Image 1 (cartoon, rainbow, N blue to C red):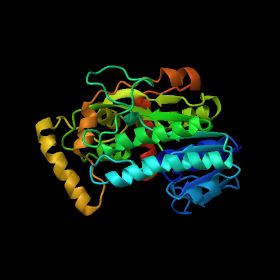
Image 2 (tube, rainbow, N blue to C red; image 1 turned 60 degrees about the vertical axis):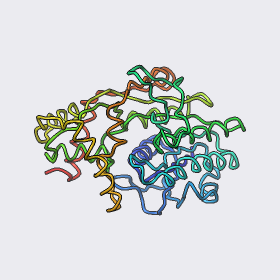
Image 3 (cartoon, one colour; image 1 turned 135 degrees about the vertical axis):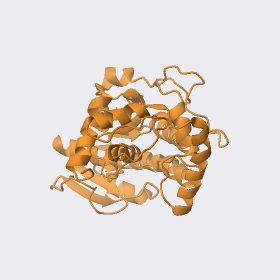
Length: 332
């Protein structure tokens, strides 16, 4: 089967490509450049690279022609207020163009990667599932990334109403091996392993292994119900829990103390501004801090039932991630 993958050079995209090739599929990898995705993705005859941009409909149509399934992963992830327009363009116009290209080229199924950030977080710590409402399009009250993922879902659903066969995945925080970037959370795991944090950030989130997300995405391509969405989440764990698991896997000892929230509340805006001026990615922003203090009980019952989603233990994920970083020369 011929499949196309947008966001092919990213953390999830490169893991997905490896899994698709292992199952014997022919893969068209879309990225901004024609360079292969980083790391250990080899280039057999079944893998080809295509220069594509979600804001360039023509490049999408060329890449999708003859493809049976499209996995749309390309997105702009943001925890800062400084790139709102770029986030909205990529994450809203992008899905619109992807869906239109799928319709015009006769793609059998689109698997669209959204996020649990698209859901409206309740005021109290209560379970959230696919029936949870999407965040409102309120520029003053809702972070740009959250709004963009909800609006992107709505674009896909409009195309479903026009005849497109599409399903939506809503992953929680993704981590795991094969993180060549590394991603923001992968960088945090590395910093824990190297002992670079004197204090920990208090807070929790829902973490899911990239390998489990990939497996569920591939199942969604075959068994997902048209027009349905699936939360693919994992285990709730605190930042302290992650640091302790990293230490158990051979990293440095976890810091003993948590930074007080009042201190972080003052430091986070400064870190965000400095990173913006330096054109770098901030490790902590007010949005990131708010995420770690908000409810995160995302339920994957539907994905477990219909896709066979089987999230592994967070301890196994962290151990495999630390070992992967060590095996690839990121740790001494």
